[in-house]
Image (cartoon, rainbow over all chains, first blue to last red; front, side, top):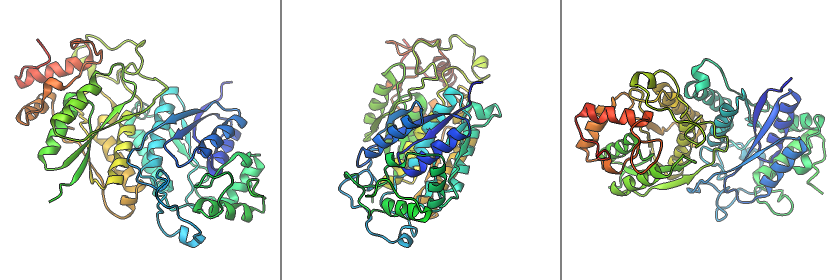
Length: 224
Length: 224
């Protein structure tokens, strides 16, 4: 029997890696989409490719331009948030916010899904232990599903392309526990915004990751 | 006084050119976004740039990849619809449909608008004399506005970025009459899907254009 296809957004971080392995466990033929969008560093791109390979998937890397650089993630001259408490991180939208990033990623995933006849798009969005990005919340994903319904041939025919966000309401520790069970190769993942040879430990992303591994009682393979 | 900024999606065709000049008349500083997305031919790209220049605007050209080629517009091996009656054209979604094209274009426009502080996105979508594309209909644009509300920093702050589609319910003739009044340089526009040195006259796009100019009683500057 041919497996049903699913497009999976893959960034190289803990969440999307775990999502990929969850989608695989559900029996989908997973087709990861990886974006080269001018990130500060290329480490997460390399991570994403390794994770896709280790899951035995055929990925596509899409290069996209965002020449308006409205984010510290795209602009090395802007300062990254540093040494903030978890409470501070959860307070507002940080300088690493990239306007409409998930909208752009989901749009390409949608185009791909419709072109190849996939009925699912998996995204590792999380609205619990996250950086306050608006486009990681359930309301946003629901709104995007209505765009799919009203803006595609498939939708006009009364069929669906559904967005699945299996991590949306999990804590980082729960995500990592689930990933351990699925043998997600966390040694290949990359979370740090800085992109040096080892994680900085101080950026928001490192702090959220650390909390997750500690809460799950699991050793982060990237930390000595 | 500084003018309010508006991002304008510009394809090089009659509709988006007219939309640009309408937005200009409304007093916006218009910032056209042009997409190089692997169209069969580059003529419409050149047209878009000329139109932007003649409106005195600073445009950006974004190159995007859609490596799944699910459309006759992206794949020269696929046959274009040819010599169809206007009634046939309006019946269904043709092979020139590019999955999620306007969703992708609007996503980039949204990112750009939020990054530069623009409160409007203009799109030349039309749901009357059109090719049956689902992502040209009012319901789709409405759904995308909800994505903006729920998926951006601006939306979380209770502010809006609105989509304006001033042609959505106009006939092609009404659009061209409006454009004549605004002195839109239709001699620079390009509609033909084939992209030879002169319009083929037989593709859906040429047929819709012809009906528009004839109905408006205006001579198409591209036709000898």
